[in-house]
Length: 293
Image (cartoon, rainbow, N blue to C red; front, side, top):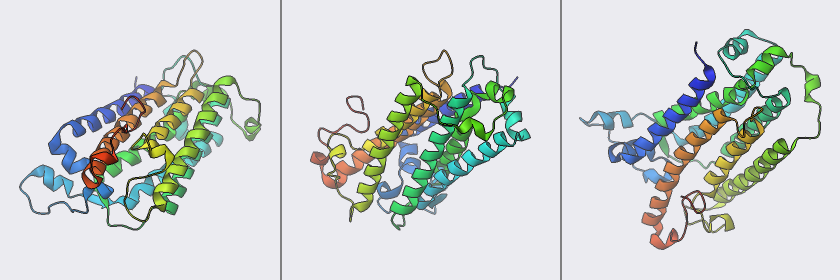
């Protein structure tokens, strides 16, 4: 029997492996990973005998990043309506699980709210802070992002499938009750990390031109906004941990993908800063994770 939990975990880990492999192979890294400012405004070659060069020509505007968060937000509402109205689609997916320890209904609700807030905030930031440009990204990068957020909209509730199949959800379950310690800690990390990330994005958008960021959080990290993105998913995995588990391991697998994907980008960003503004601009700075990377 297919187990959707295993499928989701495996897909996140395979995607992380693919991103890491692409980063390690120069022939893939130079063609498919650079996007936005790191492309230096150079469009891909149109005429080539190399199939990789031909594949790299399939690009979309960098502004399509906003579609990631639109997909995330829409999917959150789709699954909410599916579960609330007891539709067949979510039941068919929920039946494709074989887990012993389930999330509680309260955990499912809080986790869903956190993912919705993340999607809505990032959608707002993408629309509000993105400046008009000719920057582009490889279409595979865009497709991977759409897949990730669509998958995350399922990952936040799939380990609670047994509970959802046994209990009928209604609006009375949305009553506010004192959180347990796990939920309190997870939500606190989520709120703080979200606030820092929003501040980073607002600051970067305020820069008149590409320059070395001077905001305090950029003093020791090249990409602090990537670091707190990882903290956001760590927080969600804490809140969504089923009974007997320290973390929700499906969301941890998603966190691994996010960490690898952003880590690859952070590495490229550090190199780009060093080339454009000189080695001193990144001297003494970690790429993304303090004291680690």
